[in-house]
Image 1 (tube, rainbow, N blue to C red):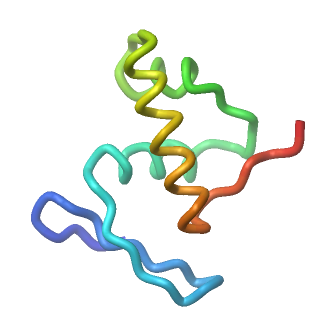
Image 2: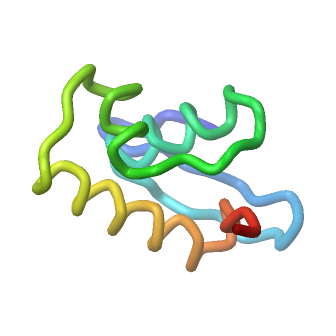
Length: 79
């Protein structure tokens, strides 16, 4: 990862793809990368990032998780 102004440049070693993430996307990815593999809920991630949770914030986190998954930077854990 490299910081470029307000965005984070992320290189995916598995695919060779490079992506620009917003600050919030980078923060979310950092929390996921620094913790042990586990199934995170949007509410738990909201608490971990901001110490609070509400429906709008959880919806935004869910959108960001879906985006990171589409980029191949994260994957869903089996239920």
